[in-house]
Amino acid sequence: MATFVDRVVLHLRAGDGGHGCVSIHREKFKPLGGPDGGNGGHGGSVSFTVDPQVHTLLDFHFRPHVKASNGAGGAGSNRDGATGGDLVLRVPDGTVVLTTDGEVLADLVGAGTTIEVARGGRGGRGNASLANSRRKAPGFAELGEPGERLDVVLELKSVADVGLVGFPSAGKSSLISVLSAAKPKIADYPFTTLVPNLGVVRLDDHTFTIADVPGLIPGAATGKGLGLEFLRHIERTAVLVHVVDAATMEPGRDPVSDIDAIEAELAAYGGLEDRPRLVAINKIDVPDGRDLAEIVRPDLEERGFQVYEVSAATREGLRELTYAMAELVASKRATAPEAEATRIILRPRAVDDAGFTVEFDEVDEAFVVKGSQPERWVRQTNFDNDEAVGYLSDRLNRLGVEDQLAKAGAVQGSLVRIGDREFDWEPTLGAGIDPTAGLRGTDARITERPTRARASERLAARKARRQPTPDLPEYGTDFDDES
Image (cartoon, rainbow, N blue to C red):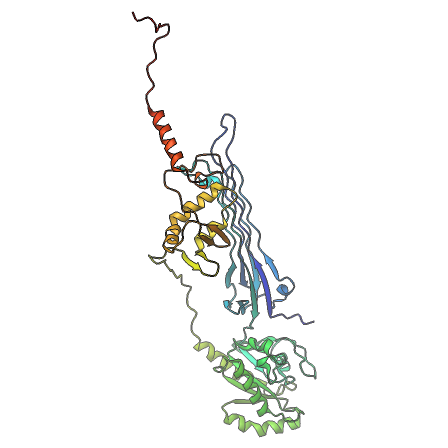
């Protein structure tokens, strides 16, 4: 089985944030010493980094499920939970990260290049962090936010300066074996090479890399043969070298027709029109091959190709071919634009940007609130705790969500969706309600609205309590004694 893997699908899962803690400080003579619940730790993130020592995606092929560690929950005595460890995955140089829909997320070229793909969830705040001047002892804490979960596709595109293209058994692997220290598999049957080979060529002061693309045949760009699997490996090359077999015995084949067929496949694949081309007519050590090379050379030179007659077996003509490749690579590097320094781009939010939108879904007849902030607040709310729900209502009201819902036409009882939660909208009650009143974990705003009669009774009771107490007579006074 081939040990070269250049495309894998990974299932990434970042760590979840730890839950905040609800705790009240207690010690002797201080039964209620105030809230001291700690915050939850943040979940670990998943990122990719380029490692020059990694050359294949084989490890991910056998372990496609990747998960970072979760953050620990908070504890009493103001103890925060531990942060989950980030997971850094090492990938080869030239790895492209895509979504399952084909959208490119990152093109990782250059040692040390790093990108964070899945971000860990935020840890929830404990009740100590939620306390304020109005809410002295919160009876709730925030939940940890779930980490991001997504599937990505990793594709490896070899970073080589020179790419060898040609029909199977044209001698590409033989050329790499004599030009570099690479030792590819060589045999006298087609499709011997099942994986791209990469070698380093050193010539005087020049050093460049060379790679071949196995299995190119007519129709490769549409999925025939092995070409479609490995054509991506020549996208980054600076020079293309046509390796043609001058000693083939197959009927209907000759160097000119072979080059025309390969050029048609390269054009169908696209993006390689600007690459300079060289032609290496291989196997001239065979008498018939040398005669055929001399016949077709003028036709190829008329098309603008630089033609070199070589033999990988006797190494004839290889020095001239190597110098030509080194010259084209050097000129390509000289004209390549310099890498720009890393710039920090600031994108301030617009003045009229509220951070969320309210839309009406006609299918479900629901008002949908979209925005990173309100959606995160909903994920961090414990809906089994009435006080936490009231706190969420306050936050959404301060953000302006209720005003926008009213402008959009929402009325009491309308269906509102935020993230994966749906609610029957109840507008916030009037001001003057103390959110700390009542038992811990409850909120007066969650109870039913008082009726006008009950409100009148409470008002009368408050007036009665404010009336002064009448003066009482002294002890021993006889009320019947009028004297």
